[in-house]
Image (cartoon, rainbow, N blue to C red; front, side, top):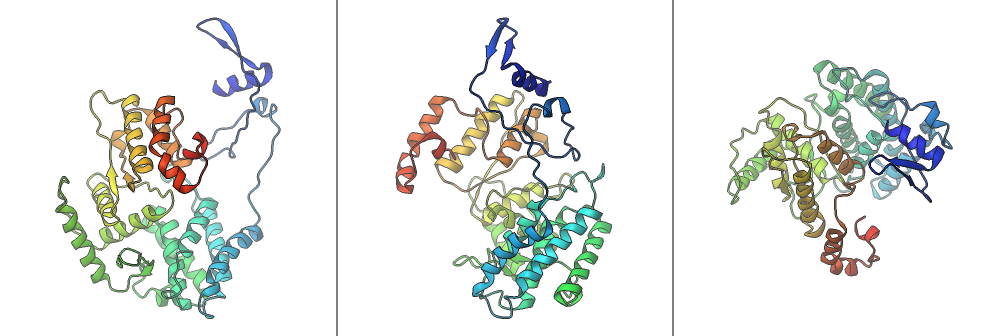
Length: 381
């Protein structure tokens, strides 16, 4: 029905107001729409509606174009690195594209694995991690290769749900390491486990480095947990920090550090998803914001909480983690707002005009210091 209403406006330039029983003409409006190919939850859009548009088909870029884009980025980054490391940029680009293509072909979505959907964003995330390399810490071919292996595990393997798929991924990775890097997974990672990278062990100069001493990392986590429990106003957490839990915290911190980073944590109740998220936020000195659902909590209350969250992060400039659980989805509209936050960072019609003006006034000094135009679209961007 919504698409038919759009088609009606495209044909006749008006809608009917059913309450007043009058025409509502909409003039001087240009309609720009976007759609993906059907499948993976996307529905077929009728040819009847498509015929009203001038269609531009954005095809998936050719392999050579992908290699050129990402190869240019990583090679530029490696310009200041050791001579031994510089040639590895093209090898990592080739390997990442081949791993991606193999996973897309073999790890297909099924009713029990509906999240097995991979796209160009996944390649971008691998390179987002590679671009955090530091010339003083990743000064050998082996060090850069371990970083590449780690990013592939984080982007691809962390999404896989069973041992069979994860073993298949390791075989893919081992094959690419052998053919392109001339090293085996066993030689690169003697314990046959993914490397662990962290940037929070050196507080004075955060560097994304390979954690060689796991006992040091465990001690740091235990001390951080003790500091968290001593923080006034928080509920103390009695956690056993075994290896998997520590690795999960490192995964969480890696994503929180990223621009517009977000994670969907899947697990049975009581598996520690919220506790480890709070610990990760505490290590990075982020605040945790969480809604409190009551008997009468509905869309209006949820929108008010989102305003508080936006004010805390955007106006007060306090780094914040928004922790949202499945039990807090009281209405389907909550998920629509969450989707808007994830895709564009904005929630449509969240603020009234007077509230928008209030926020502009609160940000006036920051706007002047930044040298940007004091216009609503610019300030809220």
